[in-house]
Length: 343
Image 1 (spheres, rainbow, N blue to C red):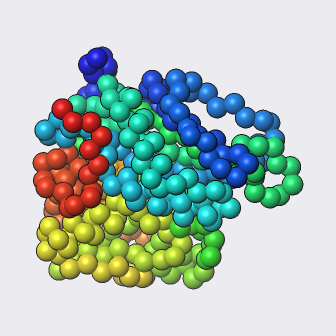
Image 2: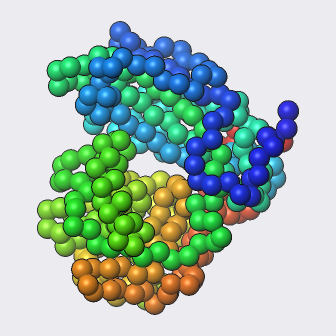
């Protein structure tokens, strides 16, 4: 079989059903063997734990066609570990990391015809997730769970090229100290929906959340970590126990140090120093880096020297290098690329 007849160049960032997905169920204290299925529907009881008390976690990663034609996934071992950490925090039975990797490999291989070709700008998005599946009416963890992985081909996050965005300082809090901000739980994203819709309605692309304890330090947005570039070309990333440990951010830090020879600081970033940075970006799986051109702070505007027309020069180098590694154009560090299907 060959690639699906899809207009790869005009794909949006949305859901398209593919042929196979992976399902494994946890019951009586153990995970079953799991299997691939063609059924895209999830059937659960009306009182399922996920519906009553939001006991659900997820991950997000991508598969790519590299320059030499291989189908690969980018650092899925880190997604496997992060999902274990999320499960432990929400009193869910962790899905074993080695089985997570096997499930990713099986699902991507089964949907190989949906992996966009090299050079199209599109990728295969992979969504592993887990939820409490048995009836739970009292406030307690579920006894049964389902782990699933589906895929969907997606176009580039930015249609027509990457342009700097405008964000605002948000009056809402994203996560509480010692809360769940550091894990990938569905509940974290549900609470951010009101704030992001409100931001969009007022003409902003995203929210900048400050720490809820003091509201003086930069945390993250609803779905991405911040990176800043100083005027002497250092990479600075906020350090906090209440932000999600982004795999993209972690990879960019390594690229900055080892590929570009940059000095890197992972530390608390106070909002008052943001005006002194030369460049700003949001990093995550979907877009890799979204450049920020302007921050609105209750009537005051912070405009970065990099401007509103193009990605800043240092941010662009980081973006191009990491994308080059993912697409097989630049040699990757050992263990970063998992080959799923060779040409």
